[in-house]
Each structure stands twice: as C-alpha cells, then as structure tokens.
Length: 473
Ligand SMILES: *Cc1c(COP(=O)(O)O)cnc(C)c1O
Image (spheres, protein in one colour):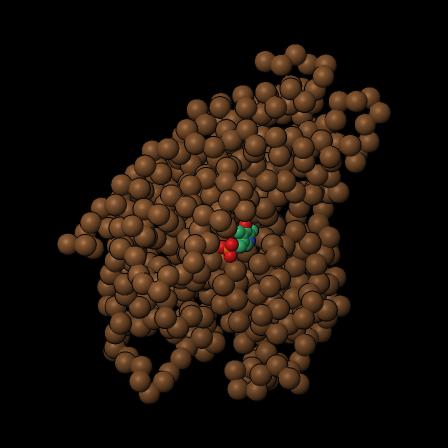
C-alpha cells in the first residue's frame, strides 16, 4: 500500500536524522540561497509520487535544519522531543482529529482533560483552575490575558465581550522590563496599546522590586493587570511572588504569570521554592514544547476562575454539536480547528512520570551550571550570571590591554559566531545590562555530561585560537 510505503520512508528518514544528531553540525550548513534553490522547484501541473515527494523533501532540506533536537543546542529556550511524545505526535497527525469539539474527536477531547488535570497537579496549580492547550506560550498569554481583560473590565462595570474596547476604561498592564516580547504582543493583540504598558526597571537580580510595583499600582486608579515572571530568558530570574502577588491583589489587579519554562521547576523539589506564592496568581502560561520536550506546537494556559475563562472564550453556533458532560476545547481555546495537542503531552507525562519530570528539570539545571562554570574557567571568559535554574550568561573578553566594553561586545559576538560555525555546539547572544553576552540555556532531555564536556572543549579551542597570546590546543 502506497501510504504504508511512504510512512516507512518517513520512519527511515526520521531514524537517520536522530542517529546523526551526535555527529552532524548543530548549526545549519546550507546557505539561504542554496535552500531556496533546492526547495524552490516549479510547482508542476502534474503531481509527484508521495515517496518521491518525501525523499526529495528530505534531500532538499539537508543542511537546512538546526540541531535543536540534539543535546548540544543551547540557544534561546528550545526543548527537544521525548520518544513517546514524538511517536504520539505522529499518531496525532495520522488520526487527524479536529480537536475543537468532543464531537469531532472524543479521544482527543478526553486526553486533554486528563493531561490538563495531570499538569495542574504536577505544577502545583489550584485544582479547580481551567486550562487550554494553545499553539505556544504566546497564545497562552493571549488566552489568559483575554480572561484578565474580561475580569478587570467587568469589575469596572464594563462588558468587553458585548461592548468591545471603544469607550471602555483604560487597562494598565504593569510588568517588569525583563518581560518576554510574546507577552507584549499578546497585550497588543488584545487591543491594549503600548502607552498602557508599564515596564518597571528591575534590580540587578532581574526581579521586580516590590516598591516599584506598589508605586505603579497606586499611580493608576483604573483596571490593572500585573504580569510577573517565572524564569526570564536571560538569567532565569523568578519574581518574588510571595511579596508581589499580595501587593497586586490588594489593589484589585489581575495577576498573570509568564512561566514559559520556569513553571516546570514546580516539579522539582529542590527548586520548587522559587515559585512560592505564585499559586495565588489568577492565571499562568507555560509551554510543553520547551521543558516537557514535546514537539511544537504546544503551550498551556491556566486560569484560576474557570467561569471567567469560559465567559471569555466559549463559543456557540447552531451547527456545533455539544456533547453533554464533555469538555469541548473550543470553549477554552482561541482557535477553532486545531491539532490534538493533548496526545504528545499525555505521552510525555506518562513516559516520565513525576520522578522523570523532576529528574529532567534537575538534570538540565545541573548541566547549565556545569557548562557555565566550565566555560567560565577558560581564560578570558567572564561569568555574568548563573541562575538557580537552566540559564546562565557568559562574556568573552577581548584580550588586548586597551580593550573597551565595545571591544568585549564585539569579541563576544565573534566568539559566539565561531562556536556556532564549528558545528559542535550552538548558542545565541543577548544584551544584558548593556553588555553583549552568550546565553546558556539547557532544556533538552538528550543533553548529557558528555555533551557538556564536548561543548566546553569546543569553546576552549575557539577562545584559545582567537587569542594570539595563547597556544592553540
Ligand atoms: C519562549 C518564551 C515565551 C514564548 O513562548 P512561545 O511558546 O514561543 O510562544 C514566553 N516567555 C518566555 C519567558 C519564554 O521563554
């Protein structure tokens, strides 16, 4: 059967891809022009055999994939894919359920019910909280902040679902300058402009100072939303929730938490304290496609008050078949037709169990620390920040005696580029407190002590070869 043949081909290509992760360059090796040339064939009048389509697709993409599925990719915050999650994702595509309604895919609906319940338990979120599986944390923010907008305007006597935003009391969104851009985009999509976003400066530890929050809340009398951070992407900073959440609640604000990766430390008994007090927030956004290591796209929104969440998102139309007692995903998600996102999450959680998630988080944090300390031990490397979680920052100093900060910045970017070009490991840069730095972010289940060792050795080689005073090793 043709479909079986093509799926077998896909399996063999997939196996080859995974088997090669340890030996291929982590950085892509094909240029933009090359990929455009190879992929940009004319769309023919006649179709092509499916097996040939897949073979040629794989061939045309060769060298065009970033090795983020492997253990030596430390850029941004990108997780890998656990074996069962990958397999469940293949089956999700195979079953091809429209996970909008229970009626379109009963198993897809129930698997989300169960996965959502497990996640609340694992992440220590209130049991009655409602949830939605979204494309990513960005849309989880949209979902949570739409509920927030509904609630704070309702308290001000305004029904946003019926009357819209024109003429509504202005909502202030108060947050820290370390906020992730996805939250800002979510705010914009919800009709709140940048003029109403207050991004407060943080202390050197990346945390929002309580006085600054209290002052900003006091300065604004109208409806307010406070967005706090559980793990910022530069230094993995966690806001002091035990202090900040009560301050925000006191002033009638809705409190939302961006825990795209940081919420997962709730599963780790050694680091859970970082989230103390966060359980008292009104909504939380996280990603399964980062630290839980399921394939894209998979974010999760949680809302304490399910009635508010439902009032914001629920949808009824004459042709929608509602099953009694079932959970229809469309009542909680921003999307209509959508992928059955519960399957890979369900699989990953069963594969790992509570202990497995805890071990995954702990391992990644330890590898991040070992990487940071190992890299910082190389002459000319400055450790800028070492978090309690899976993020760290280092800077590569220019060795000339008269080097300025700008020279160190340039050198840092040059070293990052050289490391990535070498293909052994991959990192991204950032600017932190005015300085260029290399981010170390570990959230792939595959990363091993050997990956850490190989990475440090590769960086040492780059740093030494760039320094005329050090012999190349
Ligand atoms: C990745 C990230 C996001 C955005 O998540 P997406 O899944 O890419 O939409 C938001 N906040 C933080 C802190 C992140 O690291």
